[in-house]
Length: 454
Image 1 (tube, rainbow, N blue to C red):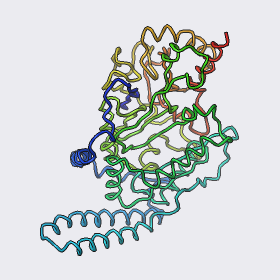
Image 2 (image 1 turned 120 degrees about the horizontal axis):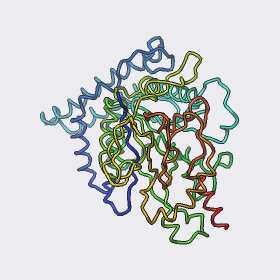
Image 3 (image 1 turned 90 degrees about the vertical axis):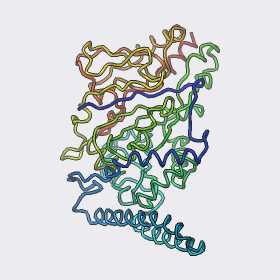
Image 4 (image 1 turned 90 degrees about the horizontal axis):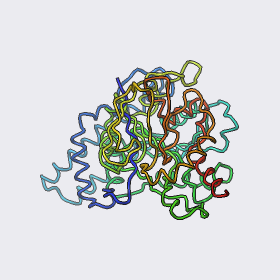
């Protein structure tokens, strides 16, 4: 078994970008409905019934709240599908419009009352009673849940994340309306660019964390570079990370150098998806096939299930008996299959075809950020030399690719002939309270400032 690894697309101001808000919403909605029917074989992969042994698992059988939550969701699936099936019947029978509106309002009202048993406050904080290293006090971890998650499962999610990464986590609650109606909400958000209440709350939480002086940052123009985003089973139809360049704060660098040294606004993006997860198939795994559509690295694991704890974290960050993440697990130790980029601007670069790994030569070339060209290399050579001498020695098991924004090709020598998921995953470096090495972007900024002072 190999894990499919797609280096981040990069995008370009010169390429056509079919983003959601540039097309007709009705056509987008129709296209989404067709796509949903095409992906129906994956629908039962959302609640895959896998063995559960940990109390934080969503389907842990010895939890009364878990079983009650599951029973409510199963009822809502039948209830909502029956309602949707009745709508065309009512239209065919030409029932009175007023009674039809009363019927719809009654059904939705009952649905809201039932979902009130699942939902809770707008946000929750992790409750795991473990010591957090003081070195993490200047970090802020915020989690926004996906479909079919009530407050009980959200609490389990953020507790599992806190246990995995040894950091306090705040969960912003995206309240569930039942799986079927949650997918309908996805259609509304994807095709009509509508921000629901939870999106607005999450935006405020992230903004407050970025501007709070208690947390690490540099200058206001570079706040977003401190942001890292990790998604699981992403249902979006696009994921942006716009370019900006160093002249926003390095005003003493000449204009030509400024044009050459472009970076991305968001510091790092990674996506994790199951090949048998309906939500992922309907979202990220479909739209990463479109050039310049989805920014961030994509790790596609064979398997199904959409629940964060039971399906994703248990497979990717399994816990040992003492509650710490195992240093070795099947997912992280699996060889990666480098997916061929769909556009000419991916991390791997279009001028080199990435071989199926393992790599026999033991030398891997990885491009982070924008494509390196000959005229860019002339400008970047001195900065790259500085970065090389300023970079601390990487520890055992550190990621080959530290930062999606680095515009310089890196050649990494490895004794092992096989590249594994852990060699590319930045999120893996946060396990058990650890932290990744300093970002190449930060080192590049410091190197540029030193060069300017010469």
